[in-house]
Length: 79
Image 1: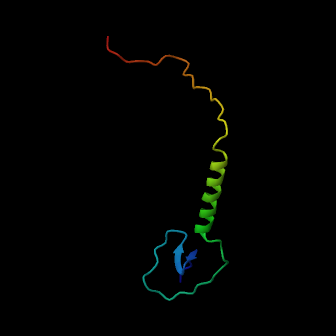
Image 2: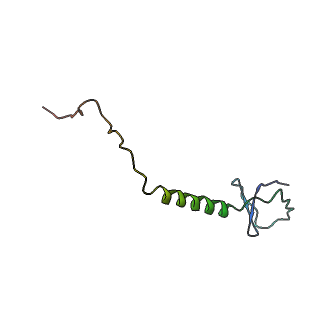
Image 3: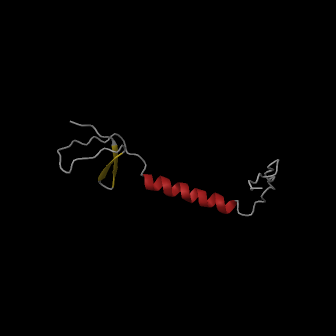
């Protein structure tokens, strides 16, 4: 007997850890809870991201100071 944790998406079971499943086996499926489908969560995240990007499109960008090396680069030329 083996216990495998995973997600059921559109009627298909996908293990959350990389455990190979047998091609044919008798199984008992215990549904713990109904999580939010990952596709909806990802889609909502990208929709919110796009809204924030469009809202900040015309915001002024501050001037960032340039990086100062502090010394001249060393060249290795043969004399």
